[in-house]
Structures are given as structure tokens and as C-alpha cells.
Image 1 (tube, helix red, strand yellow):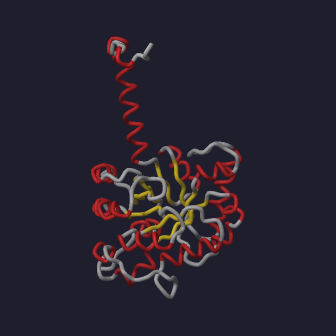
Image 2 (cartoon, one colour):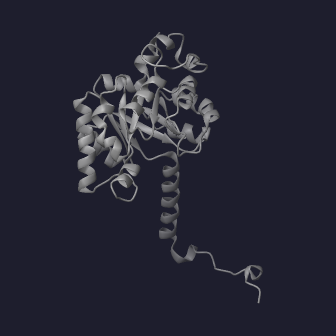
Image 3 (tube, helix red, strand yellow):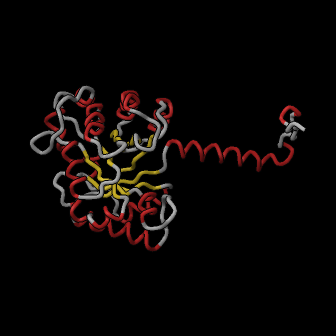
Amino acid sequence: MAFRNPIRKIWGIGGKVLNGWVALPSPLAAEALARASWDSITIDLQHGTADYADLLSLFPIIEKAGAAPIVRVPWLDEAAIMRALDAGALGIIAPMINTAEDARRLVAACLYPPQGTRSFGPIRARLACGETYFDKANAEIVPFAMIETRDAVENLDAILATEGIGSLYIGPADLSLAYGYAPGFDREEPEMLALLKDILQRSRQAGIPCGIHCGTASYAARMAEYGFSLMTVGSDARFLEAGARQAVTAFRSACGEACLPELKVNPRLLPAR
């Protein structure tokens, strides 16, 4: 039976994709994350700590959970894109897509000829997706063009007109930097909200789905109401940090001063006189 990308399947019925994010290349952490039933999970090779070898251990966990494996590659690099696809990625998020030529290169690296220039050799993708992989790959792979600069916004219509582009993906942190704000997710500044809505509207007019990285589930739900097609919420690293902080804060609050350790000074750590 021909394989189907869960992202394409959800979009095909007008649904929204909830995307998880892996910054820590731990199989155990990935398995714990995947149990939450995300629609897709992205492994971050740009700012995360995973490398290519980690894809081979993390992809089976994501696939077993029924989610689509996505990879954010370190940069717009054809070799990195093709290797991630050969390992089994069903979507590629390429950072800093600023021009139509950037978008064309992304699409070309993701698709087999004659639509693209991807070299054939799906060493693991064939095992994960079956013998029909070649027949269906071009229709199922999603090339995500990351929009995160002023140049990208100025060239957005040309990027959207690139044949084969699968989706936009807004990176709020770098986009905020480009417009003079501190980096961060879940923007509330009127200028940034207007910009996000403008990118979304132009994307929808072109018939191209648009995704966005969010810091909280409530903000992601709001973006879904606006009309975004894919929402990322946090990351494994941020969940771990937030959960640990919440547990420690709750303990300190409930226990009070009685549970604070007595402060003692080790004489060996005192400065020499």
C-alpha cells in the first residue's frame, strides 16, 4: 500500500497540524514526547543538539507514534536536505529562505526529477515508507520555506509562486529581530501581529499552507483560529525546563523556610588572605 504523509492527509481534509519539536537527541525523551500524540514532530538540526546519526534512532520512534517526521536542516544546503530525506523525513524546514531562488533550491533538493534534482538513494526512507516510496515521494514530501527576515517578507509573493513549495513556516524569533524587537515567540506587538496576519493572508491567497512556531498552547490555538495550518508548541528542552522550574517552585512555596537548607560556608572556598 502506498505511504501517506500524515501532514498532507490532515491538510487534505481541512485540518490543522500540531507539531512537536525535538532539540535534545534522546530516544527516551523523544519517546516521552511522542506519546502526547502530535501530528508531526520536528528534529532540529539547526539550533538543537541532534546530528544526522540521531535521525536514525529518533525517526522510528516518531513513526511508531503515527506522527510525520520533519527535519529543520542547519541551512539551505542540498546535501543536508537530501540526507535527511533519505533517512525518512517527510518534511524539510529550511531556514532563512529570503528569495524565490532560495525557494527554488529548496524545492529542487526535496523532489526527484523532473520536478527537482534530488538524487536517488532513500536508504532508510524506503524501509520506513515501503517500495512505493519513489512513486509517491514528490507528492508527499513537504518543503517548508522558513520566513524570518525583511527580505523574505519583501519577496514573499515570489517565494509563494515557486512551483512545488509545500508550506511557509514563520520563525517569530528571527522575524522579531528583523523588525527591531527582542527575539521571542507569541508576539503581541501590534506591528508584529499585523505582519503575521499579512504573511498568512498572502500565503492563503496563493493556496499555500502556513505554519508558525509558538511558545504556548493557548497562543497556538489562537493562531489556528487565525487560519494557520501548522502550529509548533514549545520543544522538549523548554518542556523540561518549565516542568523542573514548576516543581521546584511548588515545593519551595509549599514547604516554606523550614525546607531551606542551612547555609554553610566551606572554609576551603574562602579567598586566601
